[in-house]
Length: 548
Image 1 (tube, rainbow, N blue to C red):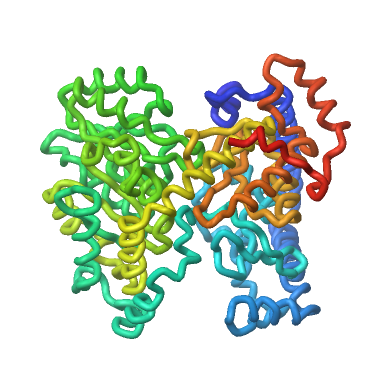
Image 2 (cartoon, rainbow, N blue to C red):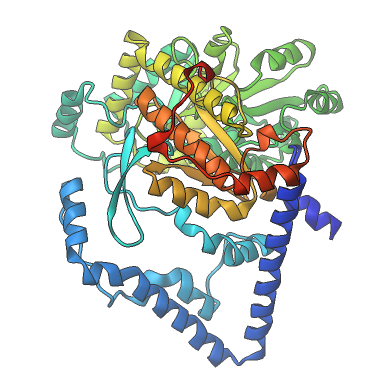
């Protein structure tokens, strides 16, 4: 039992005692409920179990389509917003559309989840799934249109997209994208092993110059850029296996790449606690003389903190290793010229291997690896996904180059996203929230602690016209559930101040002012928060002195 608790509840963060107790109690209750349900199913015949599952599938199918069948005007209004043809919703959907439910009765399908994760998905995640699977019916810019459970469309301020520089909403050089579609079409319709395109070759050259590296390779999928390329940075077993030392908060794509390297080329994988440089130093001492690669992120998307690059460079003066930095969230939006974390610290050109994606700041698709020409040539030659997958669509390649032009020619977007991030983060702290991350990071996590609060907080904010992302287990420890705000240069100061006004009410309604409870009796503070009435946003008067 202690090991199970440590696996799912342990965290280096300071968790308020009541929040931790509530999370453990509620989650334990859900586990007990599901365990009883499993026992009940085991006691009935297989035929009865099949009937139960099919009945559940029918209920889900009916509830999914009844709104659209009885209110066809809802789809028509959505069609007007998107410019697309309305889609018919019928209750006669095939059972194959419900494979996620039906396959449980056949037992012929595998699962990507293991033991406890599967139980958590059934008992908890399925109850709050609407927080994560909200249908978007409009352009995801600084504002966004969402379909509600009743089929209606709500207009929200968008603080859930990685649209840091607001290129998803821009009309910057839109004509060049139209010209690319007319000239090259929608897709290349062939894979990288057969041919490449002049657009992609030119993009790789421009990125190499932008990043200050010898060479660069572009791939059509960001996740696979990490997952498939990491084995290529390792030496083979015959050459002396490579040691990959990974930060404990690394993205799933980095974890997949490290695991693949372990199986494919015999790499040794070690993990150090996030930002624990003493533990990292111990691992470097342990593997002194080996080929070592340290794998980290430039901007951690769940905690909002920026890589402490100077400390890694100090270590590199004492130890021999290569530094691999995933700049998926930092490229384009950090640093005076948008070149990422090295630019942020004024240490451009100090990172050995750089990885990034185009799905955030560039509002496109795909990813890249930049570094020594020998490594890039090896990836181009050996990574099966680069050779087997289609190239980046031509209009997406043009969008990336347009974004590069704008970043180099005009710093306004970079300055605005930084200004917005600092102002919004300071406002949340002033209210009393526990806020993670570096002070000017555009990713701003706000701690809810208790996973039970994820759905009501998300629903309440959406009711007030604010679209956000909530994060729970397994992406973060179970008792570190949080809201993740993503700030854009497209957000206005008026929008952000209005949201802070709402967040002040939310803090009182759901007892979230943990930042104001240090050194006090938390039970008394919680009771005060419950009985104190929230103030309506229309009569809220913000003290300007509280804001930076």
